[in-house]
Structures are given as C-alpha cells and as structure tokens.
Amino acid sequence: MEPAFEPWGRVLLVGEAALTSGLEALLTPRRWQCTCSESATGVLRRLHEDVDVDLVVLIPGESIPDLVELCRHIKFDRRTSFIAVVFVLSPAHADSRTQVFKCGADDCIMLPAPSEEIVLRLEHALRSKQATDSLEDAKAVISSLANAIEGRDPYTRGHVERVGTYAVEIGRRIGLGADAFAALRVGGVVHDIGKVAVPDHLLNKRGMLTDSEFEIVKRHPLVGYNILKPLRTFRDVLPIVRWHHERPNGTGYPDGLRDEELPLLPRIAAVADVFDAISTDRPYRPARPLDECRMILMEAGDRGDLDKRLVSTFLATLDESLVTPVEPAAAAPPPR
Image (cartoon, rainbow, N blue to C red):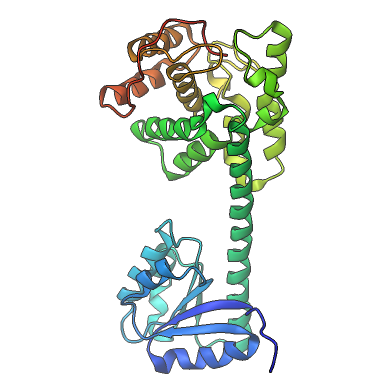
C-alpha cells in the first residue's frame, strides 16, 4: 500500500464537466486534489462548510454572470475571502476580463494557453493564498498573546475587545472605510501588548503609582510598537499601538505629538481606551458612573486631552445605548 501524501493544493473546479475534465486531468498527476461542480449552485454553502479548499477555478461555458456573482460572494464574504479564485476564460469571454477582476478574482487565464503556464499560474495563486494564511496565523498568535497579557490583570479582562468595538463604532460614524475598521479592531486588541514588559505588581497595584513606577508603565507603547514592527500584517495598527496615549494638546507619551502630528486612528483609539478605563473597575479605583464618564470625556475634549469632535461622536453612541451603563460608583483619582 502506497503511503498517503499531503496534496500540493485542494482545488474546486466549477463549470460544465466537458470544461473541467481537461483541467482535472492536468492537475491530478501533479498532486492537486481536485473536486468538481457543474454549476455555481450550492458552491458557496459548500465552501462555508469545507475549509479544506485552497483554490476555486471558475470555467464559464455559454454564460458567465453566475460565476462572476459566485466570485463576488466568495471574495467579499469574510468567511471565504482568503480562498484564491481564478477564472479560466475562452476567447468568447475575452471582453469579460475587466468584469472578472472587478468581482475580486485573483487571476484570469485566457485560453488557449500552454499547459505549463496554466499550472504555474495556479501554483502562484496557491502560494499567495498560503502566504496570506501564514500572516493570518501570525496575527492569531499575536492576538492570543495580547489576550494572555490582558489576563494578567483580572480587572481589565475584556478591555481590548471593548476598545476595538468602541473604536470601530466611532470610525463608522465619521465615515471611515473597511481598511480603517480592520485597523481599529485589531489595534484595539493589541494596543496594550507592550504591557508584557510591565511587572505584575505594577499592573495590579492598589492605589496610585509613584512617578518612577509610572515611567515604567509609560514604556509599554514603545515596547508594543517594537514587538509588532517587524510583522507586515500589523503595519496599519502600528500608529495605534505607539500613539494611543498621545494627546492632541501635546501632553501624552511616548513622543509628545500634538495637533495634526497625531494621526486620526490613534485619536479614535484614545477616546475608546479612556472611556473603557473610567467606566470599568480597576485595582486602584472603582468604575465611574455613566454620567460622570460623560463629563470626564467632555472635559478632556475641552482641554485637548482627547479629540473633541471624536468625543462628541462617541457620546452620541452612548445616547443610543451602544454601551451598557455601568453601576454607579464613588469618585476616584483619574485612570493611568
């Protein structure tokens, strides 16, 4: 019995049998695991249920609209967008190349084409998909590390997810796009990853920090920045990690940015971070009542500690009950 081997790639061929059979015969000897579907019907459901598909090859027959729509659904659905999609078009569909790329296809092979070129381009699409998977794996590892660091402080459990949620809502209300939403959500999760360098006794200290202790805590944005800087997948969140404690009036850290020097996404993250800090229990003080949280944010906006426009935007989300009000608590020193 021959030993089992891992296939080079798992490909789903979609098209009439007469069209897919030739490509299947070309790929199978090259260790591709091929599955065929004669129509677009049910393919999306199949992809949702079967994560072991690396590449979808769409081969239109007489009609192309159904396969274009299928590609659009695959590439714009978060659950399947990582799957590579390649069209193989006959000369009859030559005018559809622009339409194919607009629907999100990773490549479009025009027939006739040499067999070797077809294989190489499918391999290229697969390698790009595998590289994306590796980046996603790295992102998952770092996000798990960020959550583990947060778990060192039982008072801040859930903080990073809430910061991401609040930040995305602010971004949505001021008209930002999908790339900014992704950066804000991931940035919320990893913004405090630099606290890996802060000793537990400081994270969990009851009472105010001394000046020297606070200087240690203030290093965490730079530590987090240096951890993530080598990873390209975190490029868009680096400003959030480094500058979420900067302030428009120049009183923040670590770089003392002020006014327009401070980019928009860190300004948004700062509002979300401060609200969650003051509205939840911390070892050095209880949660503030919601009315007091509102007042603190407005005063911070007036002083320039926070972006006043973004504070107003976030307070509108409170008015619409985006955030569950916290239980009333006594006043206490401001959060660090």
